[in-house]
Image (cartoon, rainbow, N blue to C red; front, side, top):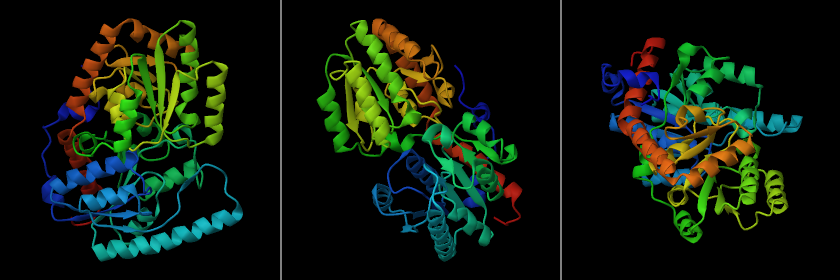
Length: 415
């Protein structure tokens, strides 16, 4: 069976020095989003692992919201420090740049003050969007870790505020270690950041699947959508990077073959123009009764559990959290060949791979699983065993151990 990352081959052979160096210390995490997105779930997993090692964790958040509520439920100390994103969807005006610069400076001042009050020993920035924590750590001469979850233009259709090259070089220069969530992401950032500073650490998924409560809206939506059709689900924000259009076109082809199938698109409409384009396409292909939009839900586990196959059409996934959720639910995955998806979906073992943007190939893959339910079950069973073995707290804890120990080798701080 293929392994997920090279470090797993040596699992259990490294000397565990993590607790000795960091027990009793305090880490300040800096988050950029008040919602419970994938990056925030990884942050919660990270905090859970570090707390288990005797490390105190505090969090700076941009605003109150679902994430703050979850932190409060877990008894994690947090404080609001408003800032501005280091990325953008559209080119800002000169006045917008000035306002962003002022907000950023004020955020640096507030973060520096709060990190000093908390007496944190290390600062940990979550996602490329947040930068004030990195500057604050430099001012306070603290080690800094940058946890990178996204490509940028390739997966989220955004640009770096100061340009990709300069922004990524700044990220590298301000960090002791940059953690990336896939090998594909490591390749991208290695163009600008020294490979010696990059560490591939896959998320664990352990908190989301074991402890986070399933939201009521997810359960109700899943119950309402159950029926006898072959059900395909695609999960993620509705915008160009996720390429839901490829799934819609594929279903147009399946309709011509009289396949009794339905497509459920789970996720909020982040680009209304793109959503309108999908609606027009659905009408043109006569798919009004075959394609359903659920809108945004807190988590999609119940929808995944009542589906037959998960489709990942994204042109460039940085990781693919929902891909692993589907595997852990025993569902086969049909994934596009871009980004990190081929790292997770091993063609013919736990899913099927098709060329990005090739709707004909996607339709063929769906039709094949529709006709061969035994194969679909086998792929799902393989995926569940594989994902259960690799995506767990123990593996994540050991890899964080190894990664954070590197800070001791690259800083003169007496930890």
